[in-house]
Image (cartoon, rainbow, N blue to C red; front, side, top):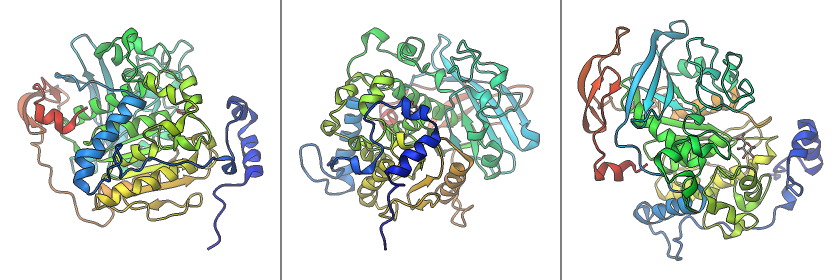
Length: 487
Ligand code: GTR
């Protein structure tokens, strides 16, 4: 079969970039590689060989040896070490409506407290009314505040820092930004497919700027802004930590099956979703949409954004140590394929876009391909193809991939492929397969409009006291359980 050009040739590429508008080209550092022919040969670290050169012989070797080694290397060299979750986590349902979106959904807006000094985040949850509960869910962090994901007037305006593109010019949310990100959050479509949608704004955990760490969880849960060591957590690790805190809450919500939560992120939040899914094996499925450098794209290709470019433009995103690899990607003990391999054997979806050269769409596919040996070692299939697929031709088994025709964005097309993939892995019944086992946890009493009721329940095998949907306290995490879900 004639080999399909991996991507429209250099001439087409430049014309395409011109189409994207000179500004993008201008925005990229001189010397940015956008032509496959300019990618220098590189050697990836072997997923199935320990750092000391010993081969990974079997699944046990991976689980007990190589996987922890890879995780530690990403913590030390790229994203930084994050603390375990807070021992106490309280939540309060601040608004709920069982007839939201014209009766299609139950909406819950929850304030989740991370400490007793008011630290916390606002989670917006939509649960489909038409599906048997508990339902699987997508957990998707947003950029501009929960009120931006849908024009639903009942969504509370975010009180956190927002990127000025969506705020009133002072990084404060305004009504003007209500629903502006709805194109990336097809809420009704997700609900109609039988999934709940949970979202929060990443800035609730840390505002996305160089001094943001002074107002975020890195300051609250240490080490303080002026005591950051070379391998201490960066902002991406702080946002990923936030995803685990949101999952902590979802584990207490009776309508959500916390064993079937897919974490999905776009762009910088795609990097975040990958790192959260790698660290926290409670996530049943992980989706990276156009995550690029520091996410699903192989750093060693130096195609599009590089370690130098990203650590220069966003020094707060990674552990300070990561910038030491600027221009020295070959010295990195890891690369994106190992990040993807940390998700194994769970379903993983990687989405790219043809015009998103900065994110190296081909590099995202090649990383997924290079993660396959770990999936196979753990008894799962991978992508099922060797060639980079043509645009708009989704592929994959336990690792899914598509290259959407178009720009850097999270679109309805991306969601359609992800929903079909999720149906195969999280709702096999919907895809004509077996139904998942009945929910094991006691289903908590309904949160009535007159407010919560006290009762005890079990939370991940631990007795807890709940008041309606409010988790009164979470008992100290036992060593075994901490080991179980670590973050
Ligand atoms: C760009 C950055 C990319 C990507 C993107 C985004 O500026 O260079 O790595 O993360 O932002 O998150 O929108």
